[in-house]
Image (cartoon, rainbow, N blue to C red):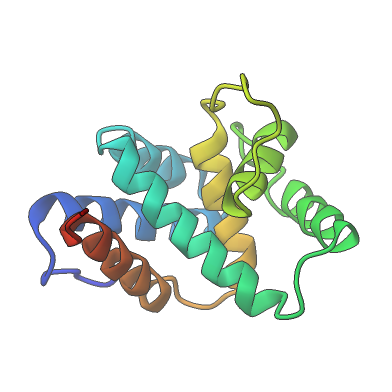
Length: 154
């Protein structure tokens, strides 16, 4: 795991928990994944959503440079459900919601965020990383979070 020491304590906690969750998902380590999710449950939802969205969005753009079509999405979701079958919180509807949210889509105006959307978003990110380290992409997402938090609105 990367140190993330240049970031303020709340951001370090967020980054370390995401990094640990991805590492645990990669290793199919259910207890470590649950521990990291427990730490993510204690962070503010808005920054978490920004960072996960930036991570997933950047990875989707790298993985599917010509765009993600329905067949690509179906294949990606199938890979996730097969690879992460060990995970108790794996839920196909939450995977779909995480992918749709990354693409800026909502499935229904009145649809609440599923509790499993965050852990399934982590699983989606882990699959998109395809064995690469999360730290470089996470640093990019953290800089975007910082930019959004420091931009003055007119």
